[in-house]
Length: 494
Image (cartoon, rainbow, N blue to C red; front, side, top):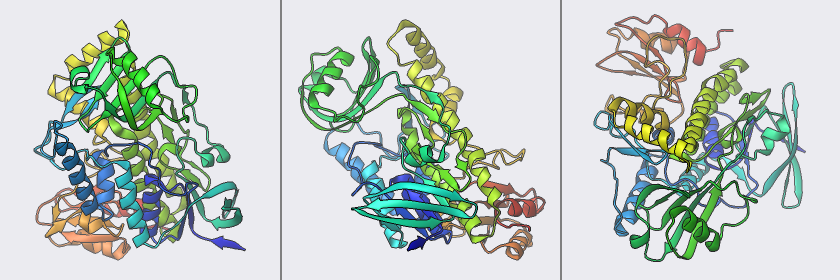
């Protein structure tokens, strides 16, 4: 017997779970297939960028984020580490060079949050369970066949086998994506040249041998702290022979000695992982009824912690659009805007991580370029530009408007006694109507029920998509262009 759902999502990591949540809020029936028996405990992201955090806040996870952030701050404070907390203007780094949030007072909440991947997956799993989403673990996709009106997916689980028919298949199964390979996506890029280590280790006399922060040496680069025992290392001697092999205490100690130049001992290794600067990007995010999100579509070095947020915003962009198509409210061509909007963003991230690698290498040419970048970052405008780029806040989709705010992802703000993100919990769009006679709300109400209309005292009027992208801004008291924007994103004018 073939079971039927609207969408099969492959991968129950953060990107897969958020994609499933977005789809479910959009009315789709979703099945998540995951090959692992339980969420991975491997060391991954220590924090999430502002756009990724905001994607979660819009879907009811603000309290869970605040709790996870508080735990992280408490652990760091308890260890006596130097804390860059909620009011800090520090926003990250570019190749180990500090970035300062020049607009911190203007938008204090649009900042990275110290929420690790385990905490993230736990809150997403809780939200998915609350929505009744089925996550089928220890389940491997054996094959799938695209047909004109759907996709048939064959899978195996604990010796059993089954078939599921869906309208669309979404691959959120990571950098080695089986879905990407089976669907035939092109995945061009550059091969690996180095090994990046992330570890939590017990180190003998670290206060004497390892200064806190980022340090470039003749052997590579390393960073120690501020979290207890946290260690990052870049080894430029080449990629690992086997990236999947377990990271050992002996390996971490040998690399740390070579990179730091210090006679340091690693007493114990709590956890460790390794990456490379392997950098690739798919030619398109969609092939027929198969779509990709997160690392399945793009891989790059983890410098600046950009990858997780990039994938979460992929999910936020794809989920509501695919839901609208499945409901029959929008044409299949809406899905083409997913590639058009998200691929250039990923392309920019890949470019800036490659640039970071270039100025971290332990050679004189890289050193000269690094010093030039350090000097340039002393200028506020340059620091602001690079910070907006690596945080994702510079993101602007090309929606054909000359107004700069159209195409931007808007942050949370007070609205009508609540907050904008509280109004977006159900996955609908929002119209902030500042028109004197409520003409914008009347037009929206006559065309769609998928946009919540809220009167506001100050303008301009603004149409906001479910992914927080500003789709239209009214000029003065005019609704000019609003009907077209609704037709582009919410109402299919058959």
